[in-house]
Amino acid sequence: MKLIKQAAIAAVACSILSLSGCSSVEDEQAKILANQGAGALYEDAKRSMDNGNFALAAEILSQIDSRFPFGPLSHQVQLDLIYSYYKSGKSEQTLATVDRFVRLNPNHADVDYALYMRGLTNMELDNNVFQELLGVDRADRDPSKAKEAFEDFRRLLEKYPDSKYAVDARKRMLFIKNRLASYEVAVARYYMRRGAYVASSNRGRYVIENFPDTDQVQAALEIMVESYDQLNLPELRDNAAKTLRLNYPESAFLN
Image (cartoon, rainbow, N blue to C red; front, side):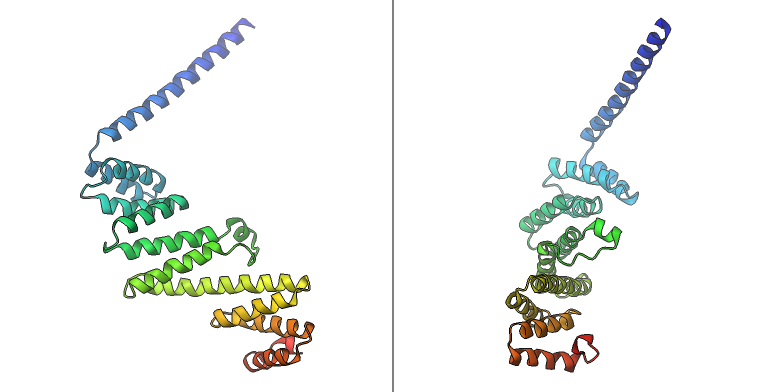
């Protein structure tokens, strides 16, 4: 029994020494980083980025940004920090860094890149990873981040129409418009299930007026036809049905 206790004590002692060793190594690495200049730190950050270790890159870049805020590398450090935060999934830090960069450097040549990254980040926040993994389409989820992303890309195109990110930004805006139109249709259907036909018809009309170039127009027209019929508004119903028949003659709803 005594031998067992001694062995246990020895094991605990070894564990403590091991942990102390790890702690010492980490402390030593922290001291090395603290004593490096901006150039050397930046090379470390670039190596980390090249190796796909964006979390470490972000940590190093953040140190440079704090210690050398007005150095010759400051602008590039902030741009790389935006990307490293984005790639490591730190959305809030990405947005904060973008906003700071744009605020402090409104005339910088890479403001278009910062706005583009802001849009990408808000799109990521709008996505639900668990829904994607499960293959569940939740069009009725809160669209606030999608709207922010749309505004980010709109600002980019308005200020920098010739930006190299403009083509992709336009494609993403169309995707977001479909997302927002899907949300309106989902809400309209919810109102229909509850018998709130005034609200559902208004949502359908909103899609027609604001998202006429999306794939949700047919669904919006069908909702309007049904809602106006339930509200006993034959003229509005027939107008909506006529538009539906003209543009989507294959609609099963017409039968």
